[in-house]
Amino acid sequence: SCGRLGALVSEMSEFGKLESRELALARQDFDLTELTQQLASGMHEGSDRGVTLETRCAEPLFVTGDRTRISAALNALIYSALRERGEPGNLIVQCSRVAGTPPWAVIAIGDAAAVAALAHVVPETAPPFDEWRGGLGLALPVARRVIEAHGGALWSGDSGQPRGASALRLPLRT
Image (cartoon, rainbow, N blue to C red; front, side, top):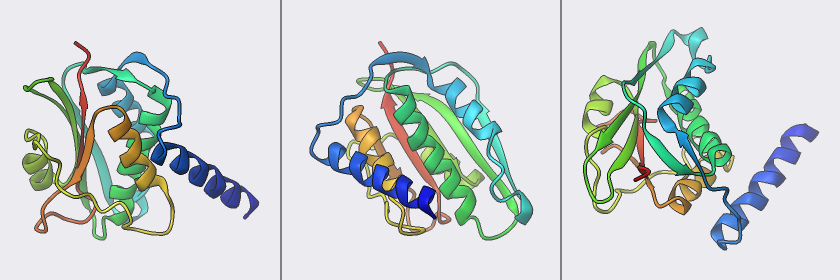
């Protein structure tokens, strides 16, 4: 209980610093594809319910940012999608490159239909993201603010998408 309380206080502190733009972010180049595959390979949430996780990441996608914080944000999104999956099935984490100015790295998380709808579209203005779904923790609100602090966006699928389907975009290193 003490550990969980300590983690919540830490999340609240980080959340406040992100909101006030006082949080210093490290700036380093890293491969978002490699990070995504590493995080997904360590996820086992949902396996007891018959939920499997598949990564589809074909090419390196280099971004510049705070690898540790982006890792925590991506981890929270994948974990949330696995936790919210009610029935057995396959969830996909897909990495793609989307042309634009700037070019984007897009990571879509969901079932096959959700990933097809989310993976190759980078909306000018990101649709809403329900950051308060699935509990009282601050992991998803912090994730959204971390992604936005890096010039990216986080969004959910439309109302026809399963719960937990989401996508994020980050500018590719140029």
